[in-house]
Figure 1 (cartoon, rainbow, N blue to C red):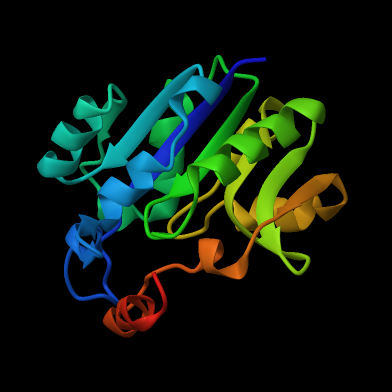
Figure 2 (figure 1 turned 90 degrees about the vertical axis):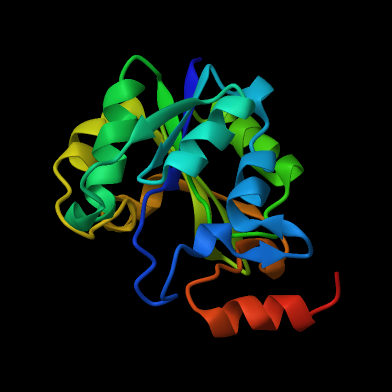
Length: 192
């Protein structure tokens, strides 16, 4: 079963006020942490979709494919389309956001294994029964993903097919995302 991975790193981070992926947490940028959380051995191909040349260079250091999103203003749906089009020969694609700095590589690998046990279904990390990211979509949902527009992401597809979703329980901190400077400060003040 070919499983691809799209690392979504193209957003404008409007709520953060600057390129949040360059922000540091304990000496490492958010994008570096995101790329380190990808177990490349679990995927047939890893594609990093970004608007930032420095992230494209970093992706290449990890031997990941780098795709330039020239139109981040089109919203997350455009990032999904770019990544999915590149990985259309895969039986499933995991979408990994770049602003979960405490996401563990082991959890991403476990999610890939869970999906391989149920390759026709959706799979995601969650905590307390609440879905988080990353999420895996099997090929049968690719057309629905490609129909998304503007800032509508995969959540809207998952909501239509909750009965096909398998959740892998992880600690809540792994799912914490950094959308604001305050959220980053909270993580900085938490225990390492």
